[in-house]
Length: 91
Image 1: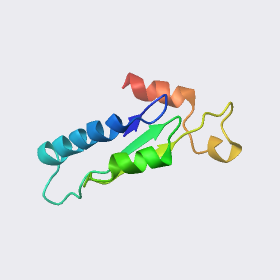
Image 2: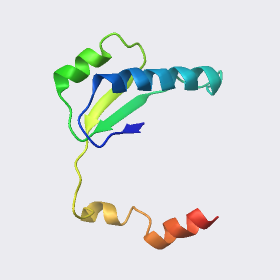
Image 3: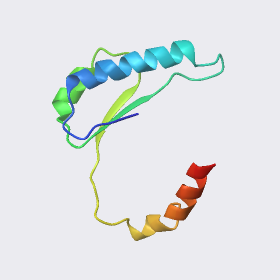
């Protein structure tokens, strides 16, 4: 997974394709499925993303994300507290 802070660029697809090839060759076991790549960008142009992925044979998706000022109420109970994260990091 790649998280980008700006607009999607076509070279991101090639770079992620390289990473997926390396992971599949070096880390994937016989019973594992092919790796899936996800590129999250602050902005994307659908046409540019489609052309960038058109001839790549590995499964890669491109999507946008939006930053929120507050955590939505429906997610608050399912996320760890700051204390839980700090305790986990100290282990």
